[in-house]
Length: 235
Image 1: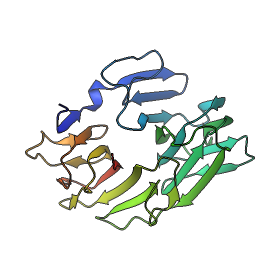
Image 2 (image 1 turned 90 degrees about the horizontal axis):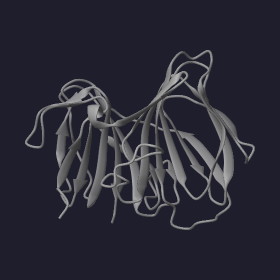
Image 3 (image 1 turned 180 degrees about the horizontal axis):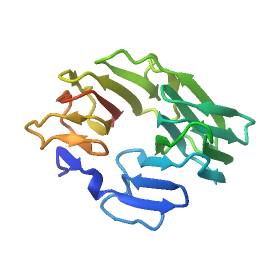
């Protein structure tokens, strides 16, 4: 039976270094393989990328994956085979539905300083669809968990092709408490700041994560100003 609340520390994550970039992987990826850590529900990739200005990922191909990107610092230049091109800054969510196959390019803007972004890949419900792209600004009131992208919530900013999934963001002032949704499966990632010690674990800080199974509605409290990225799944 799965552990109800599993803690994954930043120091335990797989790391990939290349010229001008560092990626920390939450799950098995490429040459990093752990048979007990290949995904969480439809979430098959959750990467924390740090890029030097002008560095990144030249044109490469994806198929049958929903790619959700959240920029934390700097700015990310995106272009793809649909003809879409954008400069994605913090506070904007980006969704690429790779569908039947698409080439895209992601580079740190050369004049924006170092860029950090978190990117999640999800298995779509329907393979082989026509590729698409969307990006939208997100309003994030302090202390609230905001639905940013979802396959089933009408109040989310953008839609994704995985019906069970919702991506949430919370920016918490120090001392603020947020209650997680009532979903049976949840992935909570700390991008900056720290959570206070609780019955669940020692304090969690930048790059640490919870994986929660069948224990909905948990409360988390920020020790200092903190940002959380949360994925919830209805099954």
